[in-house]
Image 1 (cartoon, rainbow, N blue to C red):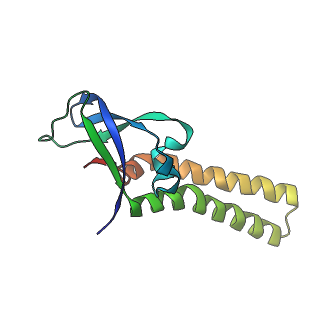
Image 2 (cartoon, rainbow, N blue to C red; image 1 turned 60 degrees about the horizontal axis):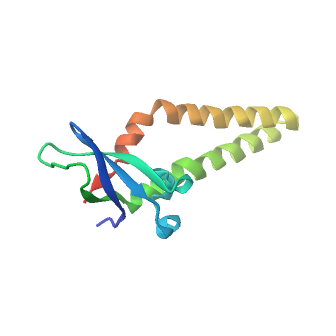
Length: 136
């Protein structure tokens, strides 16, 4: 069973199929596996959209707990930090090993990382579904 990382929050708005929750950053956020996904690192407070089912009813001011699974948090870290670093290093080493000049290798490497970012952008909706938050 997957252990979820949780954040307490307050409902600030509702819409069909989703709820907006204001989350205040806690001191434990830095150790959370979903730290990179939830975006709380840059702000003290943030509002996140959490999908809900038809039978769940929330009202403004309700106190809720927002959760994301730790495995999904680790997957977000891999996609956001580890894979781009691997692409960067692999592209530079391959270009340099092929005998290209360092400046040209660096430009191709930056292009490879930009291409990786473009692929992530294209698949952003699929990734968003994979990293959905939930209310416990």
